[in-house]
Image 1 (tube, rainbow over the protein chains, first blue to last red):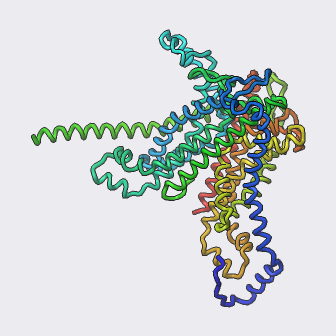
Image 2 (cartoon, rainbow over the protein chains, first blue to last red; image 1 turned 180 degrees about the horizontal axis):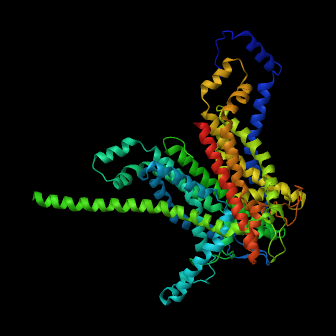
Image 3 (spheres, each protein chain N blue to C red; image 1 turned 135 degrees about the horizontal axis):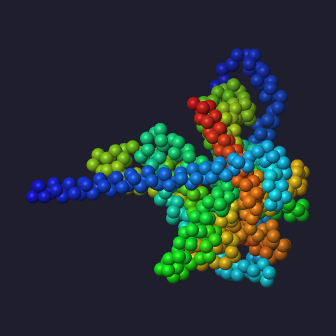
Length: 327
Length: 287
């Protein structure tokens, strides 16, 4: 904005007072630039410091267990034997399980809001979907313990009572209501709004012509969605799915409260297990210094790197592959 | 032959119409399924929590385990204090960074700062808790409220950055040029012209960021830690409402479950009212 300005003198009194005020502090611009640059640069410092602290905290465990940490299945604080595989598996299985349930529902509700519902209904529905993201994780956990877990428990009991289903090892479980399946259900509810709101915004950006051309060919509404609208919005929706994935990977409280917190690789749909985030939440305050603490911080470092990569890819997809920047 | 074609066409059309109807039904159904949990959660919280909301809940300390009564006054105060610390960090750094990325688009650091701030939004809250633990709890050798506030502040930063960035870029170029035309230096244009016109949006973003971190429990577990008694000293453990909900709902006592349900209700009402209010106010101002 530093183009040369033609300077017709403005009314004298105003000019004089303004110039007096600013002249009183000629270094103002340079000082302001410096302050803003320092504040903006602090994001770099914070991210760097976060990575450094996590690395320093996890480094003893990394040195002690090496890359075997990633594939070890024993997590034994008593004998100081630590492998993170149960939690890596737990995080991936809960996250992708939740995505499997959440994505169709989220895209469906985004279609409803942007294509099917009349305006008077679309506005409140999309607002309510966003409210789902505003409810704190710990409140979902509370609800999960007292409402969802009993429901899951009765499903487990029904499976147990049915001789045919009981013989399937995958479904075998102790009917506590707490475990992988409950965690997946809670996560599904919690990550839906992220895919839904990005999908809704992307769907709204699909040009009218795209729809009208398909309608003019005699397509039904569903055919328009299926062949003209959804393919156009594909990349943006994928970005939204990745945002949801990022959320699911790091979701902590609700998962910790319903997953059972067993430090072993999950053994079935209803099995009790733990995730990377939940093991930190569950054990960190009890961890004495030494390998246990360091192993937990190393799990935190893995989670940090994993979510940063997923989120950057999501952002790039959303920014690059849709007509305008969204979300 | 023509008749046969028409008949076939009719069948195909009927099938397409049926498919279309099924798809419409599924789309509407998915919206219903998505909203059902919200309704269920809210109904459950109100139904179970409202009976335990009395004066004692807001004014007293918790009763001993297993005994009825008591309140969470200390945790409400603790959450407010943590929010104060968090805002001091989150708002200063967040708004400053937002101004930087919005007003200095040519600066070589801007793309990196914007990308990192977007990436920070996705970093799990509990990881930010680990960072605050390493930075503050370890040197001080004990859990303390300050580290909890700092972890919440770190979580707030990227939300405030994005809100500030977005609304400041909405301020028209002509408004800035009017300021320059008066002979104002750049910093005066930003401080006295651009920021005031973007103020309502920045306030909205700040409120939403506060509402978001108000419900965070994960980073507080091993920073603020929680406390059963009154404490305002930021260098000692401080109670927080989300921590109360966590510890009380995994406890075996029914009276504690009731406190957890009432606390959840209070927290959700606070978060939803803040969200709705800011949205409402901002929508009206923007018009």
